[in-house]
Length: 112
Image 1: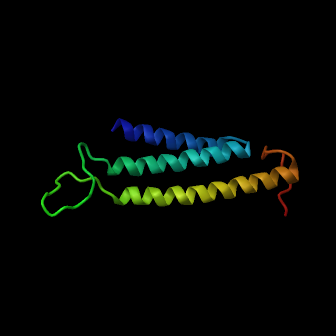
Image 2: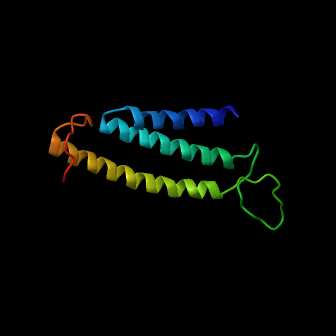
Image 3: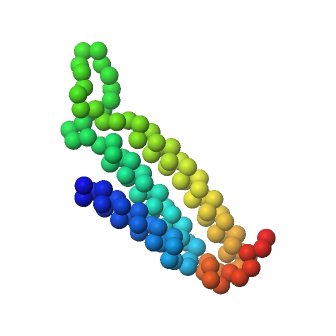
């Protein structure tokens, strides 16, 4: 149970960075932290104590098997988060080129 609370704490840290920071780079880092906290939660849900890999063989039966579905979801989420992070960094670079700052309070006009 303690590991799930630490995962929740990591997620809350990411959300705090998104909501309270004024620097675009720190906001992007907060989004990344929150995404990886969700991925960690999925992996923790699939974990079984003394679990075995879900490889089926005709001569043995596995009673305590690790669930492979959350691991597949995490692999997909990693690819999607990489693409969204690249997009956010590209947008941040364009904002810096146009306004010369990463501080969102100093950017008054966000008209294209």
